Amino acid sequence: MKGVQKVWIVGATGKVGKEIQKLLDVREVELLETDTEEIDITEISDVLRYVHLNRPNVIINCADEKDETDVENLYKVNAMAAKNISIAARNIEARLIHISSCEVFGRDQVSSLDNFGTTEENSYNEFDVPRPSTLYGKTKLIGEERVKEFNYKYIIIRSGWVYGGKNNFVQQIINDCKANKPIEVFGNHYGSPTSPQALAKLIVYLITSQDYGTYHAACEGSCSKYEMALEIAKLLNSKSKITMKQDNVDDYKILNNFILNLSKYYEMPSWQKALKEYIKN
Image (cartoon, rainbow, N blue to C red; front, side):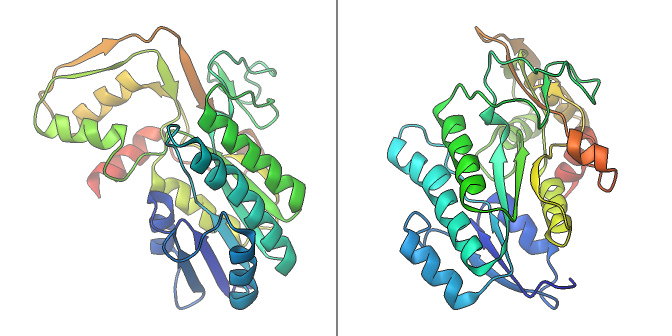
């Protein structure tokens, strides 16, 4: 990997962090892999000490907290730590890749550009102004703002419905389908399902690119959770009976990879293809 000597993966034990580690050739780069046990990223002094000691050329921030019952930790990990890492990256002139979320957009929000650059309805591109409706989304947006405030050599990647790990929607559906259990899922929750493998491949590609800024990076296409469950059942030849339920409010978290597609140098796979590969592997 030309020009890259050290890559620090923050949140290395998470689903995306693990996939990045698999893809990076350790013969070409030195991997620095940390999680909460190795360093407290919510403490600026700890982060600065770590980067000055190890001098990474690239920092990939995969740290993410979703538990809204622990408000203090939610802000610390998603917002405060993002600020600390941004400051540290600037201090050593490292390239920063920060992973954000489609949750920066709210349930009742409508794209301001009339789905410009896509055929997907109710999708959001990079020019739409975020208006989160959840506490998690608000903290992720604050994290984005702090990255921009304290650094200029950054890439912010917003992805959506990233599955993987043991406790997630997709794995639960897979388990139920394998057991031929009945499944009931929302038919009015829409998104862009993204495999951790597909997202990791893009991140590794961006390590050596010359681009900066905010990118939407979800697998192409969209579906409801009900449609996704049907696709999983089909891939597994499951006999599970899948029924649809409706939430009180429609929820659209469909991302339009407008900037990525405009550049024409990288294309995300369809959500169906990525899901098939995820289940196969």
